[in-house]
Length: 367
Image (cartoon, rainbow, N blue to C red; front, side, top):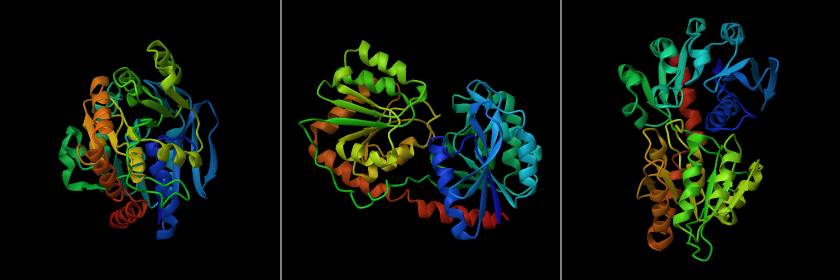
């Protein structure tokens, strides 16, 4: 069976969607499925070309310009039509307006993975333009896979298609060689360290985490990641006078992440809107025994780490609430250790093997 994955960006571009689609494609040959990828180049005006990533054929199409921060490609349709003709099944990773507006080219059985409702994300300004196309895509789909169960509750767009919906959570991948290091943490009161890992984009809410440091003067923060907000965040750090307690780690190799997780006390995902659809990095942090502070978004973020069980969930865009949650984990060692223990157990729900088997079954059902 030949499956064409259509996704906005693909490895080496870094992000939650890019990571899980790569996991999916690299494991499918073991199940007798031949994956390929159609994607956009995240650098404007680079020529369209074939590549091989993990021995998977990847067609990376040139992007001519951006509209509301979204890439637009004038040649994507021609590439999409020709590659669909060679496939047995199309797997569209949504939202992706470039592809959804070209639904007429989808002539094969269709599976849609639903990561977020565009009406609730930073794409909402674009949504009226491509909503009719997205509705048509959902009507055409044989199965709609949600990355978390609460997406259905918070998505008005999906309500008419509930009978088509399955839930297959995203998964994390351990840093190679670190699979056995998960242990319940004992809190280190001498030097409490908070960790953030992810792209430095506005919706990640890292600014609010930095502002929270004003209320917890004993806490240090390590920010692992890069992105368009980097210089802005450094400026805020200096303005608030907390630069001595904040360390920015840009472009950290994956093999060095283990040390960051093991040396931290608490992981924080302070995202402020549903562009953060899942936050799989939470599960990765939990697998190393880190309690998590996340935000109560109408996405799958609070489904990954549970309030009062594996950490604390707070309102978005609230530095005082973030500081209060971090303070509680610092001041209550029994609660901290219970969260750490529960985090290790819950992280086991988000295994790659489980995700791959479920998607392989969905593919076979749809074809």
